[in-house]
Length: 488
Image (cartoon, rainbow, N blue to C red; front, side, top):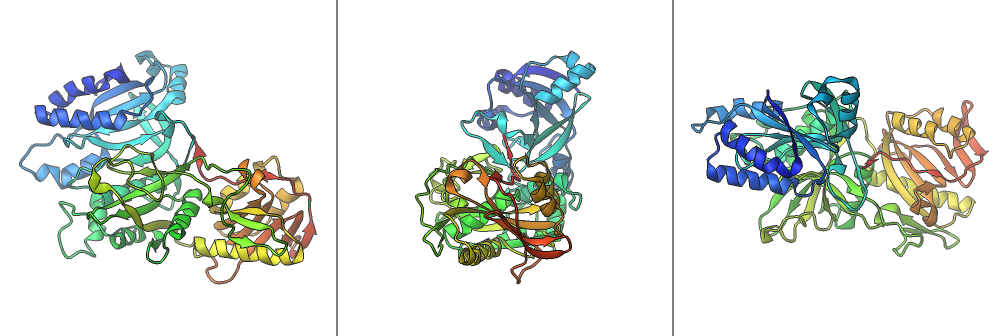
């Protein structure tokens, strides 16, 4: 394996020579492939330094090679090229010392596999969201992925991505693979899957061949995810029209659950992609939106997710972390055939023992606030609903410096299931600063009953304490909201 260090401005020229010699591309294949690469990296930071490894064995491409490409008349090479990115100047000596390895880890921005499938040469990749030039903060679901670059073990935080090869893997298989790669690196309950495994699972449903791939329906994608261990929930635009579907997507994405969306239009476009995060919410001190409830004293309740934000997609036709409004999911496509696409369905890969859904959790929280308002009038509030594992939530509570020790002790001692729904409330000006003044905890394993575990509102705690449930006065200052997404 050869390893070379170059500047990013020389990447296309350098790779052009490698593609011609290592992959034996002809002039047309070479031109088309370099055009794809240039489009993919056009928004990368200009200060990057690149490490290039030839003759790289990639597990994702090898699966496609042995189950498809090796059987074609045209000869495809078995090996790939790996391109690694660093945010500072590096040298070969950095790979041979402890201090150098620490420097490499600190500045490692991710990698891209270049595969011999012209023109769709962009294979498996994991990139930090801040590898791109951008003017806003990205809040994303992420996992840690390892890469042994020139003998040094490095890690990168990001969301896995690959372009489709248009034959063995199209958008549906790529989206499922990406999702499973993410979950398997975050949670021990899940395992990574390769394209052939996806095809084998779906062959149980299909009456025709799986390869070459003709794409999948939303129901087929849901079936595959169910077979891989998820309690899948499918939301359609027919059942959740307009903003109702957006609200489901927003709550799950805020919970750190990547959500597959299927988009369509009247031109016959059918495509799927993962929504993995969002940009900053543009919350103002005064909400100019229709309240979702009006309390008994005239105070109003607003929805946190009504504030303007764009969402981040991992789309196999684009570079990862593409920015879209939910109302125009194909806005990054320049071909007119993609115009007027809308989200037709959202497929949510839930942990199989999460039985309470997002819309029910939101309604339960609203009803509790209305009930509490009958006893003690509430001010105007913003409601934020999201899902979290109880371990992550309790960890966050333990380290929240703005919560009193009494409050921390009460929350940490609550008996919780593996996942809980959290409803946070606070006045608009405080929520604009990501501060809440109240909290409702709901049992995510309860699909029918209200299942309130405990709640804190207006310096009152209602829930279990010392072996019995009751209402207690507690000191409750504004506190930081719970976050499942990481800012980059």
